[in-house]
Image 1 (cartoon, one colour):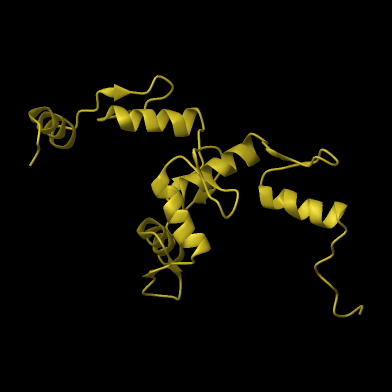
Image 2 (tube, rainbow, N blue to C red):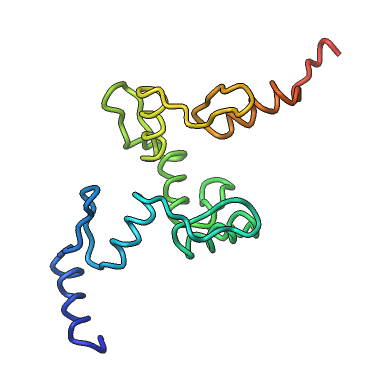
Length: 173
């Protein structure tokens, strides 16, 4: 039930008739609510992340995503359990991805250039940028070496510039 007739009309048009009158000027995204379009533009095209975690440096475009982050990462709440192995997580979508990729071996996202296939679109996008486009977005501010992932940059700084050697040969000791 709806309090306003206009709300009922919007509901019928968007949910039951599939109308999406709000179109993005930057890409082919469309939606049924102006609020959703504004959120899309802010997060995807303007990369605005107004919700900052007060525990770490993570930031998010939506408050709900920040709350999920705090619950899963900092409070380590992982109520969803895999029925096949001991994997647990905080979101159903993550559990579904886990089951599909690990237990069912599904890799539905295929590279159009080579034979590589991936379990998630984000992994395919990363593959395209780093392998086929050669993008390395993370640059060392000490020697200007660049890396495709933040973890690669961190490892570089740790081993090369901070001279941290994490692995020791058990034979040479």
